[in-house]
Length: 183
Image 1 (tube, helix red, strand yellow):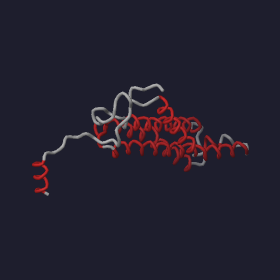
Image 2 (cartoon, helix red, strand yellow):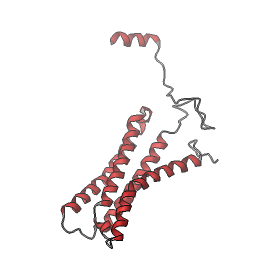
Image 3 (cartoon, rainbow, N blue to C red):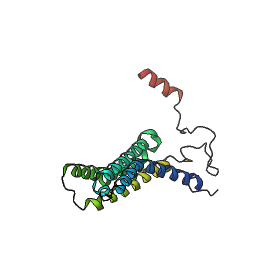
Image 4 (cartoon, helix red, strand yellow):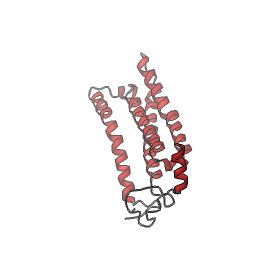
């Protein structure tokens, strides 16, 4: 198996991407069934003018936000990546959630849907899928073993000697006693 620079094999990376795209397929499945039903009835264009694609894009955008937030709150050793994660949160809000919710509201509130929606909705869905897969990749990249923070993990083999724990400096007994007395 080929080793990557971050101690994962290419097989692990491919499996991660298969899992990510499986998530996307399961999210898009009901919308594909609705589209096939409309096509069967001879109204395939309604798939692009109905709010279905905006709903799917909003779901994926919300999942991406969840992954980014999960990366912020689960591992405190990732705090030095905080600004980057917040950037992707803002990017997801700006490029996916804001526009998809606006398009969704405009489609449902109007009697006649403008033709531009036929082009905008698929683009929003593609951007949402891209940001979701980016969120998964970033969260996996940020949680890979770091030889400085996790010295028990071998940088050559990618294996650890048990559960991952941060190797933080220990307090001496006197400072622990002082902090107990303050409490």
